[in-house]
Structures are given as C-alpha cells and as structure tokens.
Amino acid sequence: MGNPFAVHDQKTADLTELVGTQLFKQVSMAQVAALLRYCPALTLSGGDRLIVPGQTVNKIYLLLQGRLQVFDDESAGKPIGYIHQGECVGLSSFVDRQPCHVSIVSDGICRLLELDEERLLGLINTPTAVSRNLLFMLMTYLRNKAARAPEPAVRPATNLEPHNHIDAVTGLHNQRWLDETLERLILRAATDRVPLSLVAVELTDRPGLTEQYGQEMLDLSLREIARVLSNTVRPTDLIARHATGRFVIMLPDTNQEGAEMAVSRIQDTVNRTEIVIPGVCVLPPMQVSAGCVQMKAFVSGRKLVDDAFVALERNHAILLATRTAPVTEVPAEPELTVSEAVTNEASESPLTDGVESFEPTLNEAESSLVTPDSSPAEAIAEIPSDDIVMGTPDVESAPEIQPEDLLTDSTGEVEETKPEQPPHLAA
Image 1 (cartoon, helix red, strand yellow):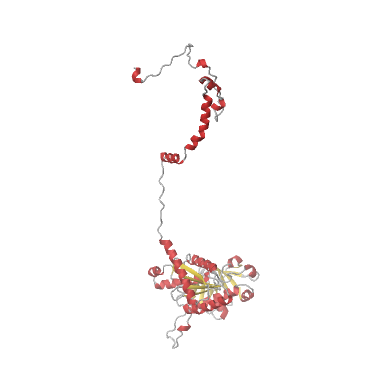
Image 2 (spheres, one colour):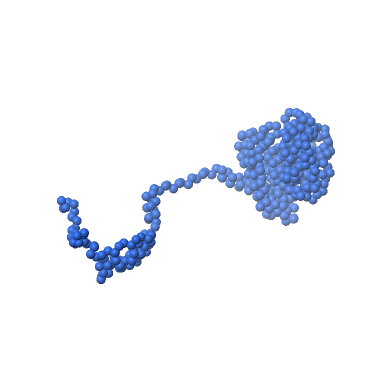
C-alpha cells in the first residue's frame, strides 16, 4: 500500500476536463476560469492513499480520471464503495470539520483537481450554479449515509417510522416524502402558473431479473441504478422511490416536451451503463422503461403519480410489442425470362400508334411510285435519291437503269420468262 498523498505532479487541470462533472454541471466555464487558474491537479498511482482515518480535510478533491476505493477504517479487505470519475471527495469532512473515518485509496492511475477553501468560497460567491451543485451533492451523500447506517440492536420505544423518509434499498426518498413534497410542488406550480412534470421509471423485466440474479443482488443493483439516475437528472429535479418499486422524478418548471427529452436521456444513460456492485461483481446494463406526464390542472399528488404510471405502462407495452412483433417477410417477385420480359413489354406498348403514324408516308410513297401515265421504269427513275436512302449515311446513288436493260440478256434478245414449276411437276 502506498503512502498518504503520494503525489507525482501538480500540473494545472484543463478546463475542458471539468465540463460535465458534478461540481461544474451546467456551469459556464468562462465565469470560473479566473478562479481555477493555477489550480493544481494531483496524480496518484495505484494503491496511493488520498485520505486516511482520523484525518481532518480542509479541501475537497474532484476526480478527473480513474477510480477511488473507499475502505472502512484501514484499507484492508474489500472496499465498501467506489468514487467514480466526475465525483467529489471529502465534501462532508470539509463542511463539518470532523475527522474522517474511512480510507480513500486510488484504484490505478487517478487525477484529481484540488480545491482549497479560498477557491471553493470564491466559486460559491460567483453567480454560477456551483453552490447549487454543492448542496445537491451534500444532500445525496447524507441520504446515502443514512441508508447505510446499521440499525440499532434494540429498537427505541417510541415509534419513529412515520418520520422516516428514506428508502432502505436505494437510499433515495420514499413514497411518504414523495407525497408531501409533490403536494407542495403542485401548489407552487398552480400559484405561479409554471409547468410541472413527472417521470416514472421501472425495470423492463423485473421478474426475469429477480429469477436470474436473486432478490438480494437485484436490490444492490437498484442502489446503483438510483445513483445513475441521480447523476443523470438536473440538480433541481427531485427523485424518490415509490412503494411499488418504481422511481418517480419530479421536474419543476418543465413542460411535456422537456419531460420527454428527460425520458429519452434517462433511458439512453441507464440502458448502456454497467451495474457496478462494489466488492461483488459487475453486471451488464439493465433495461428500463419510462413515461412522463405534465400537470394540466390542479390535481392531487396521487392522481399525478397515477397518470405518470399510466404513461409508463403505455410505453412499456409499446416496447414489448416492438420486441415480440413477428418479422413479416415480403415475398420476392419471380424473375422473368427473356422471352417473358419481351412479351410483357410488347403487350404493354400500343402498336396502333406506330402504324397510324406511318400510314400517310406509305400512301404518299405509293402514289409517287405508280401513276396511270408512267411505266415502272420511269417511276423508279423519277424517285429522288434522298427519298430512297432517307436517314442513312451518304451512299453512292445507283446508276440510271435503261428500259431496254430490264428484260434483255447479253445477246440483246428478250429472255422469255416462264413460271417456275413445282418440284413434283418439273421432273
């Protein structure tokens, strides 16, 4: 195991590496560029310890690259959790100034942005979304910490169940908190005349996943899916787990179009994210279905949740129908032979048009060839050469034929022509 704070370099981080991280989500980097100038970026090797138990943290770290392991007390055994790229380290200890009780160890090469108290307070006072992101991260950490806290061996005499607002499986808020918060949001939206939308999310095939992985493994997977959902939505959006096991996301100041965009983003992100269960295994992505609805009138929170569930079930049915629909094959047209193709073309093209178009030309030619007062030889001689070879290349004209050369042989006598007899009579 390496030494604490085994830093290999302190190069300044590039501002492009900060875009999309938890701390700088939806933050204009031009407004914070001056505060982050010369801000060091630490590099740790595999096994280097960033934080040790009992240490008081006076700065926070933003993980730019790699992954950090979280160990309970000393770094021994299996890690109890992981810190992924884009998340912050040491925020809770920085706020309450209490000694840490966990060890943070690098899992391979890691790069972190170091933010001291002066720079962090400057970012909070800047008119950006940094303070909102810090509050959201702190709330998420406290909720997850409360969900991980072990139950006392002896339950207190007073019943604190009605005041519990945390879902034990995912660490999110439960339905009790959802009902109370949603009623306030509905009243605010109706009073201020601003839109309010709801998104419902559930696993596409939960019974099949339960049979495949078991209920315990599925509960651990739901915690990871809840983390992915929390990182996908905006910091102002509120997420809770309904008693039916579905996730409900409240989108203030969001209309139907914006809610549909959120549904598309949620499905795309969750459906391609592997389920990393710390210290256990890595499961393939689990598919989810989602539906959204916008509040159209002043209704109760239960009615709005039911409408979101109806939209979810409708989209879920469409998804299942798309997956199970049989593929209809279009029969291929039989190939035609050459003779059949020629026959079809001949039957489709009208022949009368061509015949009618040539009739005047043929009549004129016949009338010019034969006249009552002219002999065949004279008629042939009077035909212009252009009419004989129309549309053909230049051809030498035939010599003029004399009438006396038509029916004479070499002796000058007229050859008597006899009709040719059939073969059976010629013998």
